[in-house]
Image 1 (cartoon, one colour):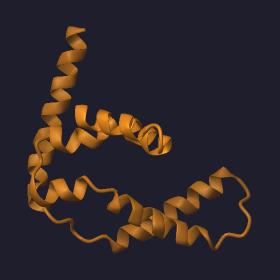
Image 2: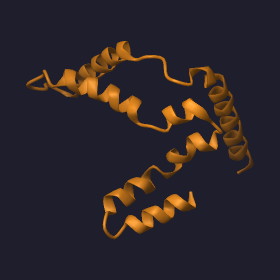
Image 3: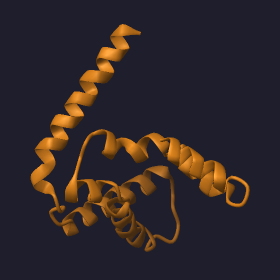
Image 4: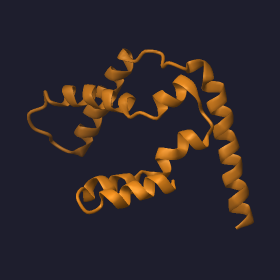
Length: 119
C-alpha cells in the first residue's frame, strides 16, 4: 500500500491521470494479495484481461448499431454482447484454486461483518 502511494506521489507532477488512477484503485489492486491467492489464479485475477476481452466483444457487437433510441437499448445490446463473449470464455488457469478463493472471500466477509458490529 505504501509503495503504491509513493508511486502515485512520484507520478503526480508529470502524469496526474496515472497517479489518480493508482489512487482510485488502490484497495482493489491489493485485494488479490490480501486474500492470499497464489499461482495462476492470482495472476489471472490480478489482470484486467478477462473483463477487457468481454468488453471488446460487447463493443464489437454494439458497433453495428447506427442510432441508439434510448438507454434501455444500449443496456440490451451490452447484455447481448456479454452473453456472446461468455460463449468464447475458456476455463481460467488456476481454476483448481477456486475453493481457496471462496474460503478467502468468506473469511473476508466474516471479518468485515465483525468490524461492523464492533463499530
